[in-house]
Length: 312
Image (cartoon, rainbow, N blue to C red; front, side, top):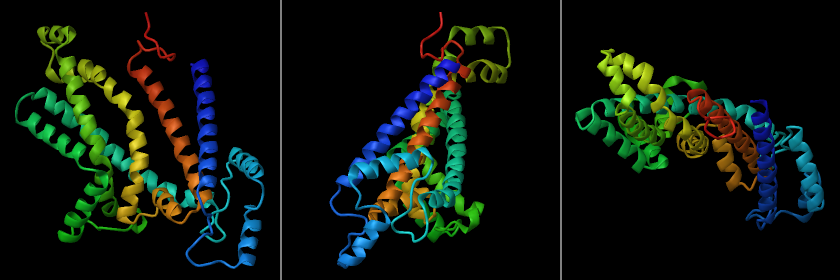
């Protein structure tokens, strides 16, 4: 375990280094600068701004200084929010993004496992058709379309939930964003769980358990569910990646001041330090999630060694 963790941590640090370096190069390769705009800035003002944010330093010096700051968890000042740093934006926005992501994950994982299991247990019957239809809709409709649809019909038309805003994290304000964000992954998990459960239910050990007269809930809960979860565990890496990146669109549509919205507005504002800081944050979260998924997979299936090879 210790060797595996050290290898993964070393790999994660290498990935982070490459991502930060590539992002830095790309940001400084884009024509214009963070203070470029249609309105001409006086040369004296531009010079003061460049000196203040060290933009007049050589590119190599800027890179070295930035990497040193990142190593100290200092992501630098923002170019568009006076007197604030990227760390301040993350501190303000991350709890909101995490709340929506958590609720969307509960909705997607819980709903997907239940729908997939129901579809498999009632294969080729009405529950199976309904679950398959829901999964097809979730996979086919992009998140921004789903978010706009829910906002218009359930928010504006029917008035069941607030169409926009955070309102200090009130549950009613979180329902629509969580559903919009969880719609695609719930469909994927439903399909994975349905296929996996059907395969497990046809295994010999399940037939043996049935022949011994074990109750259905014991067979499903104690024997079938554990093995049926393996494909879902494998999907958790892409799942968490989608939850993180999908938040960009959902937060923007529903007007939620999370890090996703900060990231989108930083792109339009050419706020390079915020773009790079958010990239570092998202990459770090993805690396951590993938490590946790690898560990969870070995817990669910002890036959899989942490080296990625099957045991004898």
